[in-house]
Length: 486
Image (tube, rainbow, N blue to C red):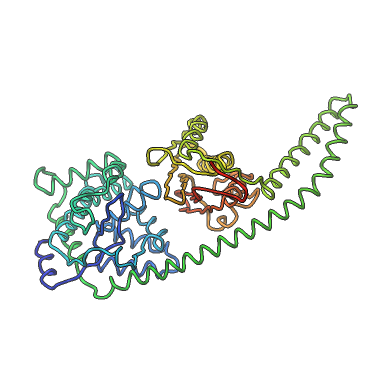
């Protein structure tokens, strides 16, 4: 049935556009963008509160395997693998403006504008059928297992989508495809594989109406291939405009945050100097009392005064360090090696908290010219923040990416996320958002100061209740005036 649907649409000359390109190594792939999908993505990008679109996007992903494959690849490259269609939809909704971008340069466009083919509609029907049946096969194991099996079914033929796509490397697939597909739970992958064999007639099953599954899959394929003229052409222009708007808003917020923190730093520098003088007097007088006092209870009270005054002095010292940090002293070192050493040093605490740490990076040295001591302090602060956010039992993932001029470090934790009302304060000195699992102190403030002093930037990407990612971007080489690098 699905083959006849694709044949009728092909006879009518229905055009199909592409989702934004997927780049992997030397290869580039263009997966098809159905008009029905384009229509919903337009609505998503125009929605003021995009979080309200999660349900409709999840339903769309469940009936558009090409979009599911495309979204899964982008989500996995930017954090942990979303295990269900709804989690995948939440990621797409949250990142829609940044990932739905079509380049306008001719050299970056796909080699052709394809037409709907019977192979594509048959592939949609097959993937949707496998996902529906896989969910049915695991339904007794609970909703989470069933939904994970549904996603595994949608991605079952991911290689086939790449094989049929327009590509600069015909017949090839992205090198990391098999790796991230294997990150789906084994039970879900087995259910999808079993469903595929059943629908192919290689195995039997009882208690499930296969005719209904095939009918629903065929209807999904027909809806996927049905034309809605003009939508596919308007979507790239809309996405580009909204992406520019989001970028301007992000830059404004970054500038506002930078000015606020600089003002706090100026205040800390002046206030720290003024507060230290009376603190020194308090400590000195309390130590005199302690030296001459013989009564045990009064000695204890004087010792408490000394200890608390010194604690206040240390807090002021942190503030003054934030306000007037030492200038970076760049030298050449291997950033990947520094990160691996840092993870080794943190392994004992991670094990005690039952936190799994992973590192994603390309093999070989990653040479940079920065201040290794300060960079280590900044990354350690991000790790400590991730541990505090999780508390116990979770995952922290570090990812290193590099270009010729810059390096990106992403630290993702599976803590409770950061509430929107706390987002603007997370780099403030001594800010505590206990509800979000973040600790009290100067860690993130010092991290922000070190990164900006290295002419870099730090951003936060959070899904409340799920994950938080801190993204650090730094130049490969920092050369302050008068400093000569080897």
